[in-house]
Length: 333
Ligand SMILES: [Zn+2]
Image 1 (cartoon, protein in one colour):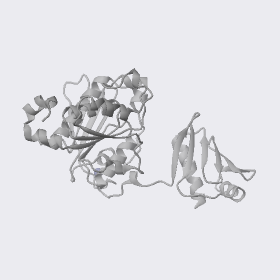
Image 2 (cartoon, rainbow, N blue to C red):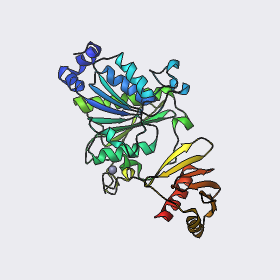
Image 3 (cartoon, helix red, strand yellow):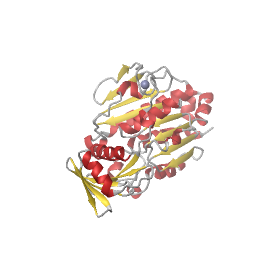
Image 4 (cartoon, protein in one colour):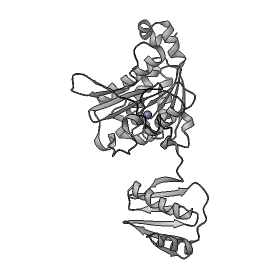
């Protein structure tokens, strides 16, 4: 048994420590929350940790982080984390994916006992929720913003899931990037997530499944909110799992203000002369440009649609660019 966690073992006992030693955890997101969660798990001698994160270290990431330093700027967060953790506990195996978790690679959540959400956006949480509910994988939601944070374990069937509580709406989103965050709340929420994970593996306390913990700095007590399953929930209720549905295209933000490239998943062959007329009949301003592409203008956006179905859409929000592209794809069907 590891000396590193001798004091923890003194408190929880050898049997429970062994359970942690064979525990497998996936952590999605390796920013401020993720780095503390991973570090605490490694120091607790958890046996295996999979780290999924697409980002590279920026200077602004050093603020609420116990691992990254100036020498890491420009390097993949997940790999920095793996290397740093190896120096702390050689017996903890880590596996790294420098990838953006989306509906095409949700299988990365398979094969471990629990998933810990340390992402920074709602879309990723809906995705994790839908995949984990569908595949009966326990997971722990965590978020921080400003001086407050939330955690919610989603570990047991019959208990409410993330979608039961937050509904199906795409919430207008503030993130730490737009609204900022105070570092102490990060440490608190990360610690509470790790505590729920330790409880999950060792039964050392009562799981808070079915409740959300809300913590606000300066408030004397954290708040425990009871939540109920929603029979019409599209994940645990009706089993529709909207976030797992493959859309017909892929959107990539490209350089330039409000510019996107949208590519269909299936092969397309557009004939610009006839297809531009079809788009005009649907109310779009569309013009065949030399049989090479179609120029489309719609609600202030400008788009170039190529013969293979790829479009570059500029001067719109992401949502409006998607709406325009969906009209185009529908016309192609
Ligand atoms: Zn639900």
